[in-house]
Length: 318
Image (cartoon, rainbow, N blue to C red; front, top):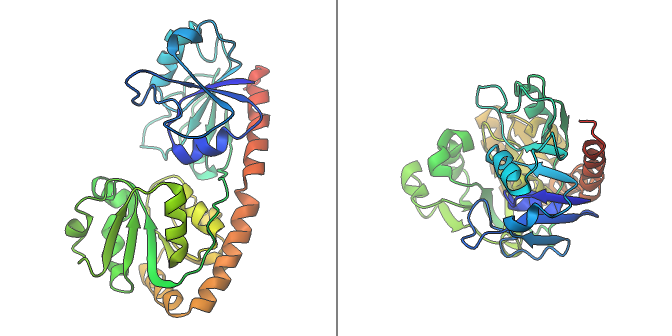
């Protein structure tokens, strides 16, 4: 199929465009959120396309990820998603207390990325399905040579309680933290953790991020209210043991043999302490985490699920 979509979430798109279709990514001279194309990624099955060409392009399915894309697709294609061209809306986010933006439509399938999101959202009359995440298996393998804790988070200062940023001091008292991701400026100051206990490494590309994570003894996951982070799945596939706040989809995605999963911060802090002090046990739990994550969140399962969804939407059966 010819599938039109925008490059919104890098890791998700990286997995999605590895299927057996032709993926069209809009590009604009200024780039930006609506015309970034591949954003420099090496994706052989993708084709960057300028909006002026879309009206004369055979598009089988539109994959939407932001509500603004509905109007953009209509204007650029000259066809209305859901009515004139099959469409599916991938909902990446947890609900914000309001009905889903497509809750009053019955012509666009809403595909949630977790089962938690699917029943927490008020979907109204919109048809829904769930396609769980799949990730491209990281090349890095766990060594755990550094008795430190790895954390991947984006915009932790701005998002604060959503990402569990306020909980970091509890764990910095147990072991030094290495934080990776976007928007880390000023993190140590706002949480009151000194440079000897918290180091910010910035937003690294995967070929640098994964080997660095693999050297840390434990992966720490503290978000209160976000969808399942792909970085958590990647850490598990690397072979890292995880210490994880039991919130949203994490309770389903992280088996207890993969690390420590709890709503109690004292239990999580003790888990970090013990795993940092016991490298052999950390490695054993990391092995279980890797086996589970490869099985449940493997690329093959993800692409097969999406093939079924795209075929269903194209056939006009949302």
